[in-house]
Image (cartoon, rainbow, N blue to C red; front, side, top):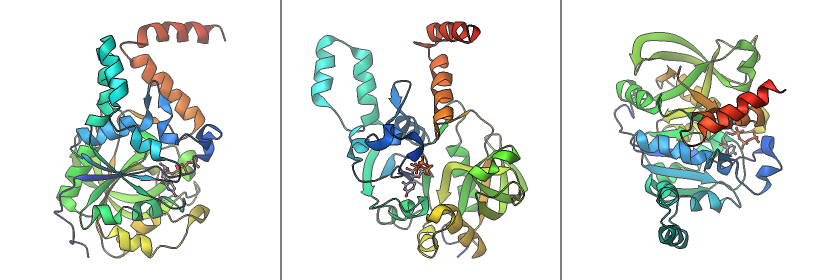
Length: 302
Ligand code: UTP
């Protein structure tokens, strides 16, 4: 099994968005979490932009019930575009068209949210026998510090599975999938590549084999679909992608990681989401100067 997909080129990315978004209720009762705005664009638009920049322009969204609006965001809106054109509002016209020009968008339905592993399994028909990337909407990677190209290089070098990783304080490791690993001695775009020897989903600080946490970027071989099918529900009663990857590793599939040290914005929970909005707003050319001045004043007055 180990070499089955070593040199399969990667052109497709799967973005599962069908989770319940419970941490953001009630906002996410009707609005999918990935459509919540980060400044003035949905979080998902940043994610698709990142994929497109890495040359992954075939995007499959795994959507849940009532989430058709996620796909709609990437459609053209001729009436809106005509109105903006008539007004001569070129900046907004470009912004509205931008999302429709990023990639070829597809969608598949996950009938119920049975876990990230199950969501990825829903992509099997679209992906076929190719290796593919997975991006999760909770992790926004700053375009100045791209991660996917390094991960795709590692996949070209070693085949198999490639995981995006960050180092976290040990008291936070219980929120993540965690890996045991040894260095390969190589770097890709300045990020260290490591050889993964074990994976565990959401370990306690005592159980954790390292402080290396899996973030929402993966390159996966097509063999992962059989591994998911063979994986029983794990942590939280959900079919965990980490458990399926652990199974592939056990069966001899190479699993590597890329340790990301660049700028990243976590939009997974409310507090991190607010920080991401503030960080990105402060850096914007159009909003930043005024917002930064107001923010300094506001903080001083607290
Ligand atoms: P999360 O557990 O972080 O997201 O899943 P969630 O379930 O939407 O949010 P909370 O925890 O309830 O607040 C990681 C990603 O996997 C997707 C989610 O949409 C999210 O992007 N996912 C999760 C699915 O598509 N299907 C699932 O069954 C589970």
